[in-house]
Image 1: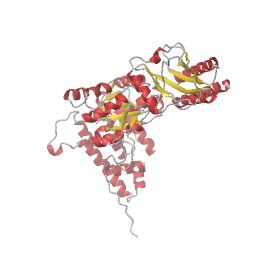
Image 2 (image 1 turned 135 degrees about the vertical axis):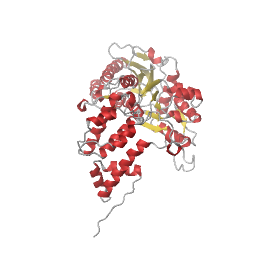
Image 3 (image 1 turned 120 degrees about the horizontal axis):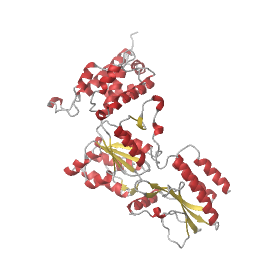
Image 4 (image 1 turned 90 degrees about the vertical axis):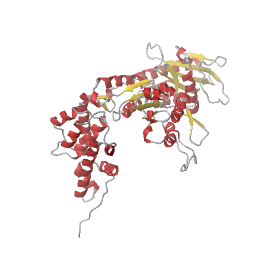
Length: 503
């Protein structure tokens, strides 16, 4: 029986699939084959050097979150004292004091605590804890648990724990280097950012991302999530600047039925939806002081109440925040809470603007162009002189502005080459990164962006007219998908009239 168990666990850990799911299945299999209860796997956060309960089939999420919050508050992690396997009998104090579901009739014979070490590693990767019930073969079970812990260690190291290698995310066949995941570039500052992500991804530590609008802060947040052990868990993002304070509170914390006018039913908030995964809060610097206090409570205690509710909800969420303003100045000005700033600013990543990474502009253009060609099944290229002119621009809107420019030129391509408007290129060349205030009547008008959109609208309207209002045909003329055309029709509020031929 024991050989069958070890064989099945070895095959499971050697198979493809999510590592965390496979390890959870190992705990369930231990319960099925052996007289065990309450199997738990505590994984070490290699940044703050503490252990947290990650997998525990018999423990509820609320109990797990409470234990993890208490572990976070302790000055020293008791689990760090465990260097060798331990057998704790009922009359001995439990060093971990893990939560446990009540046992029916069987009292535990002993608790086995087994560190999962790889070779001569000083600190264990994780700790496996099980309770033996209804069996006096403690020594046999200890040997089996030790053998399985070795299988777990080998599997975790083979999967890149605690560091996920980022080289696999490079798409060498396209010859377009990527810093990490879908973040294109080879800039030295971005390489440093990638190295930090490589080190912190296995941790649950909070991260603060600085960068101008359009630099790709959300892509960096997704890279942190995708390279973590919880990549299969939800990644939930919300733009704090895009919502009013009341709506933002409802979005993040949820609400109960009748909490306010229009609340027809109970609704989960983003914190609940991201439980076990990552919550990305973009433009956190634009929130009010009152709202910041509520965010601080969740970060400190891991709990909150929905709007209009009294039930306390516990969550285990990694929070990644981003901002394009200096929070240090906001703290000095009294518009951002100092305690929240220090809570968020544990790991700080600064994303350089596009004008400081000009070597990446040509790579980004090639990347956008290849994606557009693949979607439209075309072979549109860019002229060398156009590439040279684009790399000389400052791009105040950063990567987002560059992508919009390439998309518009792709829509208006001629003879399989991107067609850039001469007037638009001149307008962009004349733009400054920090422009002087415009005249009152034009103060809020992004001139270059408007010209891009105007030319795109004209191209779409012309195609719709030539296609007599048939959107599928117009999309084919433009070399884009029907979904992309419908998105732009909605974005620019273009009126579509289907024209019928006279009989």
